[in-house]
Image (tube, rainbow, N blue to C red; front, side):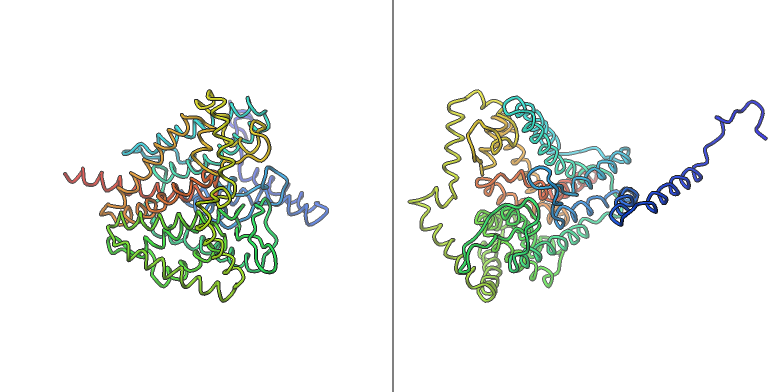
Length: 482
């Protein structure tokens, strides 16, 4: 009997019964679906929910899943945007939920101004989206805001890794090894894809090189275009370099693992035919020699040995491509003086168009015309591209955006350099990795809009956050000891 004074509404809900009813309804829907495709479609929500719950159970599990999806999965062939839908942003939403569920576990940021600069730069990008809608229409404005959100994924990864929840037994070295394995699989696929010329995934860039049998598509792996693959390879070649010369005797990866990685990443870099990425690797090597006080000859010999082995292998496997590649490099050097615009693939023409626009409309120097609008707006005519991160930000976000971005770059170099010089083996490894790579990245930004590489930026900023976190931990420990 029901106790006196209580009504049916006061009775506790039998949650297990509710779950059983919902599962029964779901099973009935799946059973009544007319075709296997509809059955699969009806099953997906439950499977997605189970995956999301499993991911949230561990604080950093979503990061591993995100890196796997962003580096190893191509975009889905749906007519959405310029390149189709990618699953990685959905995983980032799971990460956002993981951070919200564990909001009490977030830590105070004790040192540095990186977080503030990231937040300020992201705010400027978001604000410029309103200008994109004002000057170029709501469609372009919404596209601008979507790209701000994609850049924001990298910022969130940085903040989550720096001060967000994490397990006590969290081991950044183990996570770096997992990331290396994921990246190696992506580079292997890029090499195989270039050799066999598989059908390109959705939203690829039409970039080709000339060989005897005609034009062939440059290696892009599972990314949108070849320069992204080149930038990806440069990042992990910097990792190989830092791991090859451990600062404090703590080896993250054995040389038996690093040697094939160096060869595969170098081969994928060559197949991408990205000259700017090759320059970035060279600058990264110089930066690493500086931060570790190594003789440049040692770094040069290590790089030359890797390049020589890869060059011999490419010459043997693809002699026509090898001849074309080295001819292109030599021609670029010889013709740069008399024909710089041709060597730079017409970039000087585009840069003149943009600088002339600013000279004629100087008020846009203050706040720009809206983030990621240059290729889509009618303000420059058809086909204008920046292919220069700094000029692109000046035109799209004005002096304000470019200034904050330069300050952010200075803070990245300062933080990673400080970590690289640390006695903490974790800080030294991740700081050295980020410092030498970002030196090359800042140079490569002169020939490409690299902050649009939203699938790579979260990985870069994760390494930066680990370096900053471990460096701050050493600083706090030293203060406590004193």
